[in-house]
Length: 103
Image (cartoon, rainbow, N blue to C red):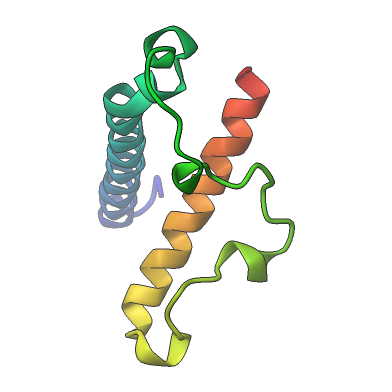
């Protein structure tokens, strides 16, 4: 890259864009946690009535196939939307694992 400044500039721009998108994704996740985090706070939810219909399953799927299961068939979904959904699910699982490490 020291020999070709155009390649170096393209690399820097690509890296900066990638870093910005990663930070944006993390910021969105943090915003969601800030907005809905009080649901996990036992003190704030102590006077609320629990409904089993809204309880999430306690186990994390082990296989990739279980992680990517949906109510719709893969044939009915456009490929770019399916890929976006897979990326979302992977990011969600990584966040859960990181949260477990923090706790």
